[in-house]
Amino acid sequence: MAELDTSGGGKHKGGKVRSKKSSTRVDLTAMVDLAFLLITFFMFTTTLNKPKAMNLAMPDNSEIKNQLPVAATRTMTILLGGHNKLMWYMGEAGKSAPTVDGYGPTQLRKTLIENGNSVAASHAAPDNFMIVLIKPSDKSNYENLVNVLDEMSITNVKSYAIVKIMPIELEALKAQGLLQ
Amino acid sequence: MPRVKVARKSTAIDMTAMCDVAFLLLTFFILTAKPKVEDPSKAEVPASSKEVTIPDDNVLLISIGQQNKIFLSFSGTDVRAETLKTMGEKYKVDFTPAEVNRFSNTEIFGVPMSQLKQFLSTPTGDLKSFEQRGIPADTTITNELSDWILTARKADRGLHNQDFHFAIKGDRREQYPAINTVISVLGHQKQFKFDLITSLRKAPSGH
Image (cartoon, rainbow over all chains, first blue to last red; front, side, top):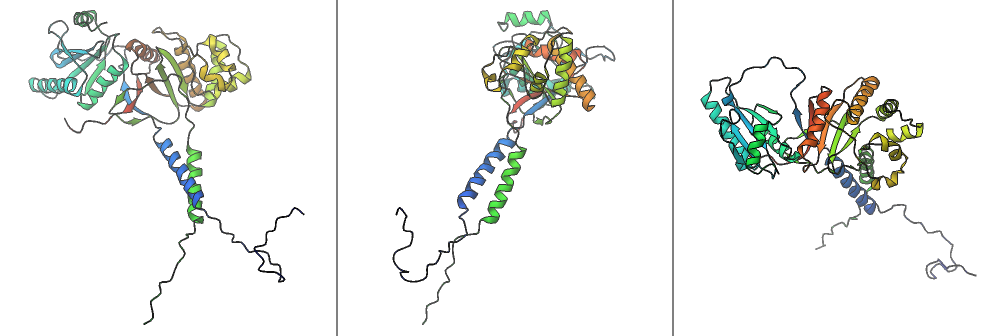
């Protein structure tokens, strides 16, 4: 009654009824396409997910021992202020006027290389490398700190430390309006 | 002259082997892929030219973001369970086994002790809208962050006999005092070496 006539045309009329032999082969193209698409997706998401880091070692300030006297002329102090600006001076605080500088490659990096070279030229080897003191103020942000630490590794500064800022240095920052 | 007939070959290729390889690789990548954990600190890390890769496991990560909120994340489900039990005893909070189990499966959290029970009873689906207040910390020797870190370190030492690798992930706009707090908390525990997580910036070609 309600059956579909699946026989193709009327060719086999009267002949033997044969079941159709269909091929067992499946077209895998679409399946392979999909599989490779997913592989690509998972490959990119797994490998690009690794976090990168820079390592930082803080000085052990719990006990003070084995402190070596160091010539003040070899130290460069960098004060990190607000508004993405910094100040730097060589030697002791208050003796030389700090210079205002920025974080860009043509600013801090150039200064670090120049100062490093002049320290190396004016002191006798092997103690002629520059020592950098990084003093972040409360108005500086994390990116400023990471930028300076990064410059240390780019310019191959061997010896540097993050140190607490002194009141006299805060005054210097305030005078330049970098403490707002 | 008879024409040279080029034999017609079928263009269909047998794709079975290719399909096998493709699915084998797919299975491998799916199984090795780690589900990405939503970072509640939403910290936007600054860029640097260093490219030290931090290890996959045995890491204690302190995230700072969203206006000085501190979030903590450390590896090991057993370490987390042990840490929560010890912290519960110390702060006189009773945690049910269900809560301990839930905490051991929580990758990252940033709530004070007073908010922790509420945090652990929130269904996973609603956690995105749950306002995490951050772990309280200051520069003194005893504060909640310091207790968490110390307890976790003890648990890691007791259970696996190993020491955590410390990492700090800070938002680039975060002010220095917030970073200094975390560094001094670690300093009080005589931990002076840690990794600052940064995104990769191309190093200058020459200078």
